[in-house]
View 1 (cartoon, rainbow, N blue to C red):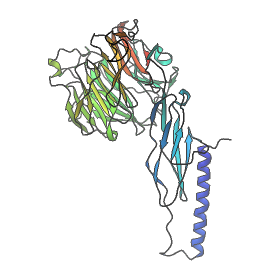
View 2: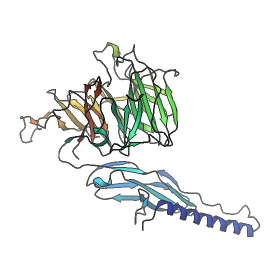
View 3: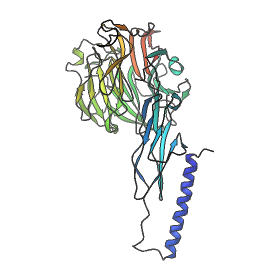
Length: 452
């Protein structure tokens, strides 16, 4: 019979209650005790919690905890709240992870004579191990979306956040199979007060503090954003219980921006791009804005760029909260913790869209022949093509000098293809917008990157 967290907690409480009772009796028998009485030990304090990890199928992964205590401690690891037999050290090793392990949550109970504390839960993502990129039509919740229901983001659990613009403008949550779920806690859906704004730029972010943050950059009825027409926006916080609060409101803030994209950077701070000026801002979770850098030397209204509905500005952060930003095939940067920008490359052209899987960046871009392709940029800067385009063999490889066609992106994808983000299992969510019934629909598909 499996030992559960609740049974461990019950045992802990009963032992602690008995020990405290015994101490009380002993002190009473001695006349109340004196100054030389030994103080009770404090609970252990966890200084480094197990971290979320993304690995390829077949790889091993180690979860670790660091704890401080005035006396010796014991450890007990849990998987999805159930005791892992024999896992009683400060490190737990899972060998040869499989696809069935993805989404599992690992935590550890640290105990001394004063009682016990449990660490945060680390989520394991296992990426498919394939020899080549694989593209397939999306199923489940993504397959049911259309002209008025747009994919916004995946939750860490695999649920899907969807913008329903035909239903008074609301963000709702579905599980992967397409069944409707509460947005968070008792909150069934999130309906921002957008007034007469026809189309917002929307981001949904699950933060490491447990809250969900949503940004709404207000577009004008034409859908175009520039320094004359930017309409401001709002950023909201939703607690796990479903309580909503406003973090930023351009109508009352001393700094007016039109937020586009929202990611978590170093130290839990939020990062967003102001669509009016293509400027990167840092935002504390209490709403304080700090200007980081202008991302373009030329004012946006003077550039030969039309930003309609889905501006080609990508902002993503990796598992270690490194922030990357790209703008309309014009520049690509890594944002350093101190706020400076370091140029990065994804091939001959700048990226159109970015997605982060673990600490790896995937970019939708063009090769030197102008063919669409998806490339992977490793943490050391190495670039490899995972889908589409043409990649000539390198010097010394068979066929050097004769381009090798890796296969185009699927022919049924409309011309305006986008990368929408990454699913928890590591697959890249892509799609192409096309006109349909007066709106825009996105036939979503999934790209499974190679494991190496």
